[in-house]
Amino acid sequence: MQPVNNTGLILGIESSCDETAAAIYHPQHGILSSTLFSQAELHKTYGGVVPEIASRSHIEKIGPIVDEALSLANVSLADIETIGVTSTPGLSGSLLTGLCFAKGIAYGAHKKIIGVNHLQGHVYSACIENDVPFPFLCLTASGGHTSLYFVKDYVTYDLIGTTIDDAAGEAFDKIAKLLNLGYPGGPIIEQLAREAGFKDYFNYPRMRKKNLSLSFSGLKTAVLYDLVKRNAYDLEKKIFTAADDLQLKQQVASSLLVCIKDIFIDRLDSALDEYPEAQAITFVGGVACNAYLREQLQKFAHKNQRSFFTPSPKYCTDNAAMIAFVASKKAEHGMYDDLTLDIF
Ligand code: KG4
Ligand code: ZN
Image 1 (cartoon, rainbow, N blue to C red):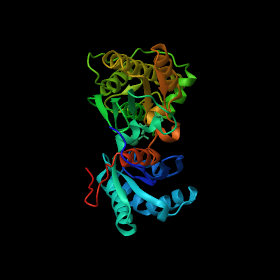
Image 2: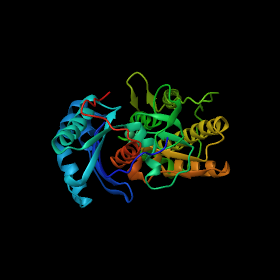
Image 3: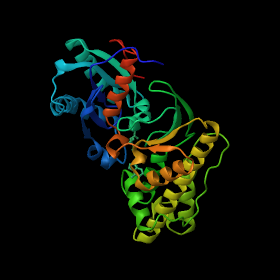
Image 4: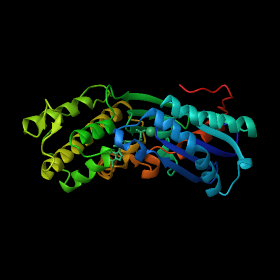
């Protein structure tokens, strides 16, 4: 698809889950600012996101976060041509807060509006800072989604494989919960795995399938039963009984991370067989903050003569820069919405 017109400044708004974020994107100069309020502390005691609390926090923070983005970019609302806003997927109340705020500005200040799919934001997040050659394969791994895409250009991308149950981030989070490690599990598991030398101690089962689907819930069960076998988990009382055994926790974390690395590489290998025309591999989403996985996937890409790109950590986790970036590409192609834009 060829771009049809030049576009002005974009204000991106993201509020699909538990981050209130805004960003300003300049078509020639890129991201001018990216601001964010994380609700992590608000949800911590509940061990997961509470939708009602999330919506109320978005309502409180969205105005100041947008103001901060405008001010850091040294622009005013009058300079903005288009608002790009996440309209799907996510928590309804959270999405509605961002969308209604965006529509209010679009209506009151006569701006254009573009709804952006949050996952499309992740898919193109490696393109914000890099010139990624098309077509490319993208592995998106976050707390809610783990999927493979074949990306043809800035607005055309195909979902070629996805998890049939849990996401990879969810596996890190659930297994961390099993071990009483805290939330989110990914960074804690990475730290413990580093201490254990990123070795495979327990050889958890790798899911090997012919197609490109992924699956992580069986891995959680395998870890659980392995802990039971080691007398480290009481199934009846549902408690981890080896909380003082640091070595065990390090070895579980290390084995888990190596196992997930192998699953990712196995899927990417199959994807390259099916899409040999892919020039590059990108790795995005919250799980892509993991330095060990970044390094291992880069090695795999280079071994297969493909370039490899992954965003800075600030663009791996949820952010509005990726939403503004996608909105700008959609604007170039004339893909605007109107004030009937709804969430789904
Ligand atoms: O993309 P994201 O910020 O939010 C969603 O859209 O879900 O991803 C959050 C997920 C969590 O499951 C978290 O455990 C995981 O990303 N994560 C990591 C790391 N940092 C965050 N997983 C593995 N290693 C990390 N260093
Ligand atoms: Zn996300």
